[in-house]
Length: 366
Length: 272
Image (cartoon, rainbow over all chains, first blue to last red; front, top):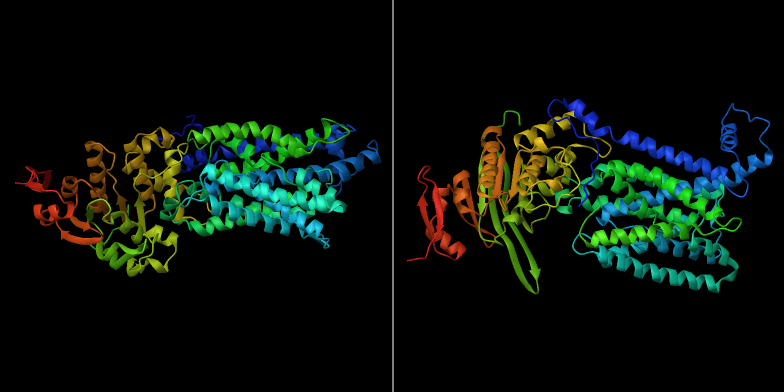
């Protein structure tokens, strides 16, 4: 078994409590800084690359020009400004928000189910959300009002239904073993996908809208969609991030968590609800994009260990960087046509998933 | 660790606690009208055959399961009326064979004992760290504070769990078979530690112990459980009588006084 060290060895003999505490905390900031650097690189690359390549310094200049008091220099053309600000920026921000949300909720599901393979896609939450969103699309109700949208809420209803059914079927006592959880998730995902496909075939007028939910992608990204997802994703992320220490306690068994004073049932319910809400909002704007919630948390665990107080913030930053990067590949690999980003994440994700399944079978919680 | 504990103050009590449930049409009584008192400064041993309800008592004392009749009080407060965090500030549990994520370091595990004292957004302070350090020094686990628990031996892991319970800073310590899977040296050192917590720090300690001789050697008082009921209660010498043990365990045993302490030593017997 490979054991990951979280930090340099502590100086146990000489240290005062304050020095020890500083040693305990020291690991987060360099890692967060490194992750933010990766995000910044992905962000600028996402703005600069595409059918028209724009110099990184010009993209930065366009971004800065929108800050109060900063003018734009004359040598940046209007077309460049529009490509950066109106076309690519909303897309990069949307991909980043969805990536951060999927990675963070993946880590939260893994903590709550105490199952390393829980992921919004694999446990049927994403496909349930897609079905909920599809029902709204085909029912022709006006689903946008006042800058908000009914889509995330309908997706949430679909996601919660999936999570309740899957967990209800899969649970043995108070945990959900890997095999039953994944099997129940696959079954529910197949059912929701079947219904979604049926609705799409029957309703040809909205087929494109439904297809973009099913395949997943950001080719229809806009500032409006950014505003649809943020009111759900940001509060949900705040709640999940606040539970890092408690999720560590929950990674013991539930009885120990109770002995240590955690109200287990209430905590699980709260985290499942907010994670499903955030994942559903992400699906309603980005479609079903698989494996982000699996790859990102596990890659971080493999390198930096399982402590949720580190894992959750790093997931948020690196999840955003990962999906911005995947979306960049999706739209540039076969330019001018696009590959759905879900195909890119699956290409990375499936080998990784099989590797994790093998480990889980061998009884190792990464 | 506790500040000037009032010895023999009642720290935990169960009165008429009954735990009954239905299984396939007939009623199973896990605990039948159980009365129990645990005072500060004493090490109380809970002995009895497998399935006699020893673990159930620990779960009832900490509000993890609700009795169908009777009540449980910790420091005078009814556990059914207070939250899980409040209970965890009054009684700490060392469970039997607890699962620990192997990559967490010992110190992380011990700091989890501070959970009931922290609000959601609070992080451990240097005060919490000092409490964890003292708990680890008392259990002789500080030397491997930064080792992952997956690398520790069974005895070391057991002491880390005890340190976590100490870090909860509770008047009551409840231990479910703390000596299981340990060799005789480690068994003795764990129980010696418990006796120290009771005598020196004035904690109220209840330990489930399978080995009757060990229980007799270290505990101030014993309770013998059988089928969810108390059959005997008192000093080891009062309680560990051959007739009673034969009735409870269903096998004949011989009880002789220890050559040094005079406390009972229980040995298998062929009857006769």
